[in-house]
Amino acid sequence: MPEESSAEVLAAVAGEVQACTNCDLYKGTQHGVPGEGDAHAAVMFIGEAPGFNEDRQGRPFVGQAGGFLGELLAAAGLRREDVFITNVVKHRPPNNRDPLPEEISACARSLSRQIAAINPRVIVTLGRYSMARFFPGATISRIHGQYKLVDGRVVVAMYHPAAALHQQSLRQTLLDDFAAAIPAALAHATQLAAEGKLGTASPASGKADDAKDDEPPQQLALF
Ligand code: URA
Image (cartoon, rainbow, N blue to C red; front, side, top):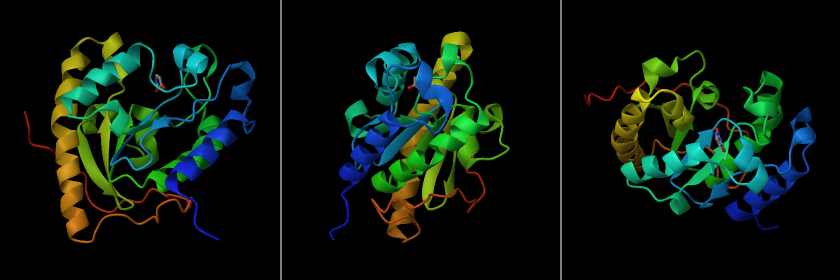
C-alpha cells in the first residue's frame, strides 16, 4: 500500500481533532482547531490553545494575537501561507484558562503526527506550554530568541505573541527575536541538512516525535 502523503496525514489528524473526546475540553467549544498551512512547510509554529475567535472559526491565530503574529512573520521574512501554524491544545479551554497537563497529554499524539507529517526543518514555539515540550524546565525569559537541535530539528523558543498585548515592552523583543532568530535558525538547519545531521522522522510516517536534547542551546549574539 502506498504511504499516505503529508496532506493526507494532516487531513486525517484534522478529522480526528474535530471528533476528539480524549479530554473534556471539546464540551464547551464550537470547533476543534487542528491547525493550518503548508503541508511541507520548512517552518512550523506551535502556540498554546485556541481562544474565542479561533473556536468560532476553527482556525489558529485569527484573533488579536494572530494579527500580531502576521506582523512577526513579516519581520522574519515569512508569509502565513508558507508556514504551518498549530497549538499544543486543539480545543479552547474555558475562558481561555491555561491548559492542564492532562489536556496537553491528550493532544500530544496529534501534534506528534503533525510534526512527523510536515517534517519541518525549524519549529518555533510560541509561549511556555509549547516551549516545555522541547525545552523541559527552561524559562522563557532566559531562552527566548534562542534555538537548539532537538530530535533532528532546529527548535526556536519565542514569547507568545499575546504576551506583547499585555506587556508593551515585549512587542519590540518579539519583533527583534523573529527578525533575527528565525532566519538564523533556518540557515543553521540548512547547514546541518547539508552535513546530513538534520531530520530523524520519516515524512508522513506519523511516528512519535519524542523530544531529545542533542546539542547545547545556541545563544544568538545579537543585541
Ligand atoms: N493563542 C494561541 O496560543 N493559539 C491560538 O490559536 C490563538 C491564540
